[in-house]
Length: 526
Image 1 (cartoon, rainbow, N blue to C red):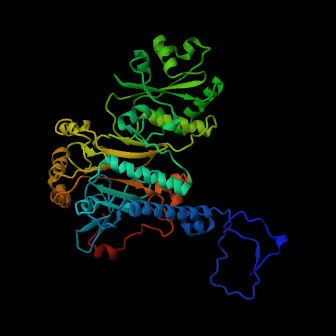
Image 2 (cartoon, rainbow, N blue to C red):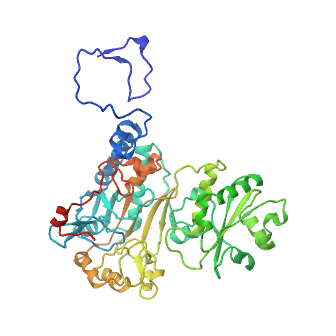
Image 3 (cartoon, rainbow, N blue to C red):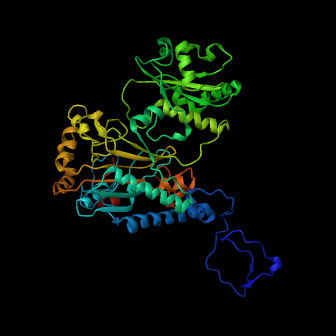
């Protein structure tokens, strides 16, 4: 190999490609061949069945995997070398326990006996806290047999950590500093030295209609049911004594453009969930100073004046109303919160407003400790009609919350905290129950877990009985974190071999079980 003549050299602008050399080839040997029947060029659209060729073709995918590896190294250095955490691998062959999500079961050759793949290392890391390990972490594989919702994977990676003799605040401070280190090291971005903002679940749901709000968007929600006439309330929904909420969206100062936007939205597929909402369709009004009461006649003079002043309404602004049941918040969002996001995204797609920019981190805390059971999540299978919002090992937030357990469990707040970035939940954690008696009380007396299922937790109760220190922890969804840092729309772009609707299309898994395998494991199909 020799250098090209200077006059033939090109200016080098990339560290990945150098064209300023010539190769003087004397002989070559074929090590392998590429099949002639496969078309493979730089612009070829390859399916996931050929993920190996996607990776070979797409430098961005390979760069994302390298970025992920480097980010993992930064986390290990920060936690292990600088803050005294011990990286410990916990077993993947666990047992079935009703923590909340559906599990993957692994049959054994002992008939009737199965392992379960862990939903998270939650119980093992609590056991480690009772075992004299003061600070634990691992980059952990987790498994949940969920309905394949958008951009979910049945197996995923968590950056999992736990700290003994620690509060939730200690964990939050540790994670904040880790996030700031990642942004500085990997993105060359210096985040503010100020602590991340903290907002309660109640405030997030009331103000943004979401437990993971993107507060960059503005469009705060206000309750106005006490201001508007009864006949207007009855027109926007069939509920009696509903809560009526509203928010403002500024699309254009030109009423014609605003009117066209809302017609297009209501005709779109994005609007269908709101049109078919059993609690009523949204009420949509446009502020126009040329009209009587500026287009807000249905509100009456007092309400129109209040809205104009408090929402700083301008010509072309949309005022969106939505009714909901008059009951406490549960779950992750409200109808008006979902509508807020749908209208924002539609306006961005139409180039009527610019997309939000920047990094807006936020802690959400004081979640309900319990949620009414539903038909989607299996919960803990108790007979009380309750399920743990996070998991059944989460501690109540305060002594006053403990007092509510016996008579008002749905009013109990949890010492639970989620880390949110730009409307995306990056991770969550909590202070744990470290008393064996209190853990038994939550499972048996509050959730009313059956005695048969109580046996599934005997190992943890026994460990806590031996004198477990107070402890708290958190898990970050590492796939999601990498996708957000790299600006990727899907976590599949940061995973080497992702699944689609639970299937690995490259290796064709899952595969059909054979009759011989059924017999080996004492199984039969029905």
